[in-house]
Amino acid sequence: MAEKKSKSNGSSPRKKGPAGSSYVVCVKNDDYPASLELRKIYQLMRDLVATRLGMVRVIDESGEDYLFPEDHFVAIKLTPALERAVRSAS
Image (cartoon, rainbow, N blue to C red; front, side, top):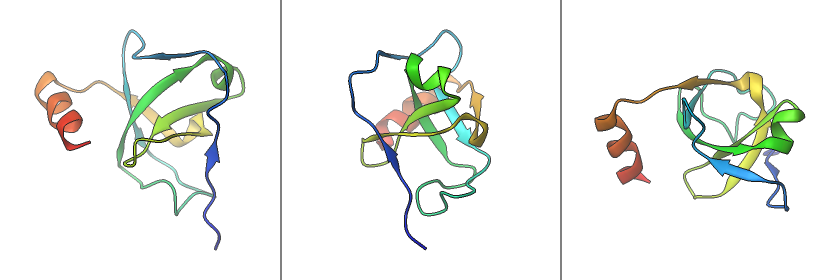
């Protein structure tokens, strides 16, 4: 099965870290099994255009950002210690 990745580094307006969660956990990887790992924490990059299209922009382990359907993720709030651990691992 071919790997599907929706990449877009176009000129859409982006903001990091909304008031609330800067991280999401993958709860569904239908159509993207090679790109999304279930139960994995991804850093969220706010993209207003993507949001209007029902998509979210997440940063993968390579540091690249990709678009995926928003229903594949649930927003989470990390404790400060866990956020430091996640940031230092990337």
